[in-house]
Length: 330
Image (cartoon, rainbow, N blue to C red; front, side, top):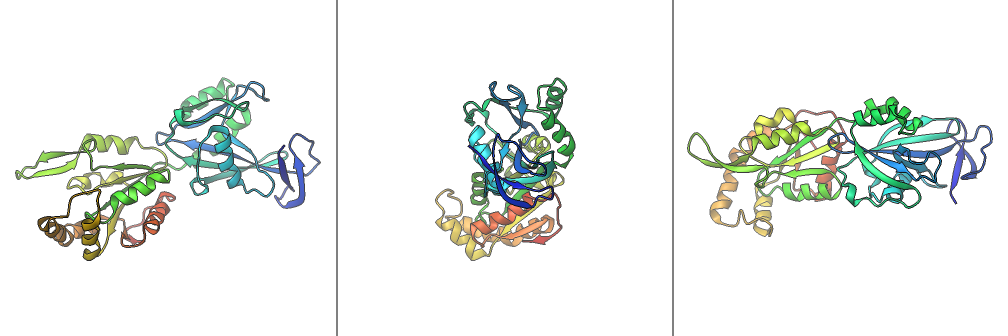
């Protein structure tokens, strides 16, 4: 049995509750939510209602009523977990709009997340299927009457408010914590790519005869141009990365004092680079010669000597904005 708090037409509390399934009196409203989950390619996660439910076998977004003493964001998180087994945090919810109908206020949220359909756990007697569809396929399903009409109507009303893809490069010298920061962002549900692997980089002989570990340009171009929704964090420090700066919304330089960097590379156990005197000398030379070049083209610089969670929080601020700021220090 679900119990909802009741509100008036101005969304002011009536200090009374309502049992789901019972009749509403004139002027009584309850709160509910709808969550649009959008993957990096712009596909929408929709679910199919159980045949025994009203509008059975029709498709919709996840959502539901807000329980008494619960906020709409709390309800949105709970609903995703209960209906499809998708765990998100409240901070991942992007408020989109409030839709007011005859007896309810619906807060609509968007979660930008790469979804593995096989990992979902559908709620028995509530949801029988889930799938990812393109906006074009969603529209086609709506025209065929396969999408709940009010769901299709809300999508048409608010689809243009969806954030377009945000591409953020995290760069900096060895020892500034790029990989550590990227792993923490991954744990928080963001799409991340560490380019220090054979998938994204390769050894190449440059015109001067020098062998360099550089980006695979076709792969990086494909990655950046195909990313459409939500934030993508890419980490790397390669000599050819400047070619791709026009495709990034932010170029973030992680920087730290030389003693901090040398202590980090000496103590880390996930990367052997920086242990020898020759490599440590090269790190200092790069700090003097290469870092100023990175700084000159960075849009944001973050002090990487700050606690990890603080650095990650400042990167998340960028992920929640579509506005680039020139030469900003966070």
